[in-house]
Amino acid sequence: MADAADKPVFVLNGPNLNLLGRREPEKYGSTSLEEVRTMCEQTAAEHGLTVDFRQSNHEGTLVDWIQEARTAGRGIILNPAGYTTTSIAILDALLAAELPVIEVHITNIHQREEFRHHSYVSKAAAAVIAGAGVHGYQLALQHMTRLVSGR
Image 1 (cartoon, helix red, strand yellow):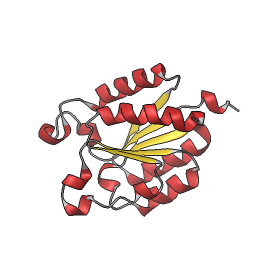
Image 2 (cartoon, helix red, strand yellow):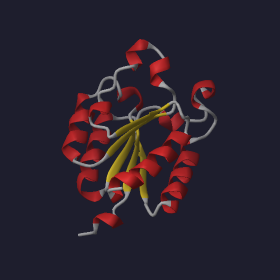
Image 3 (cartoon, helix red, strand yellow):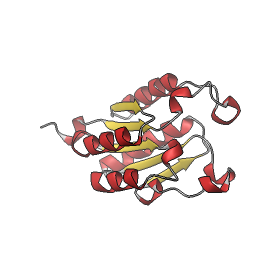
Image 4 (tube, one colour):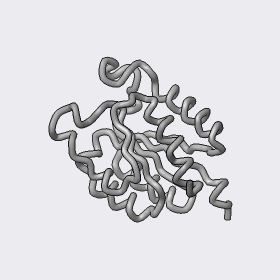
């Protein structure tokens, strides 16, 4: 079995993030998800981490990946997107994973429609980063370094 230090941080992205850079660029910016992946890989490497970067539009797939991370990962960074406000299944999977979790949102969900203000994911998250644009992923990886190293 791999040592915990050899395990990646799972960076999971929810529905519609595959359209990043093309969908509502005035809200989400012009950076594509592939560019976010590259940025995450570079940031992780600078901090001695590796990432397993994934995106799905399907809630069950995200739950499966969170369960996979329980044994194959050392932490989870999750942008749950539209599942933020609806998915108890994702919350339950995160709680069962027993890993550090950081929730990321590109926009500030608290400045948006009221229904976006509540997050089930936050109940499992050690930290929430919202409103920093795609730079929030870098901030999450920097903080994850502290969480997984015990600093």
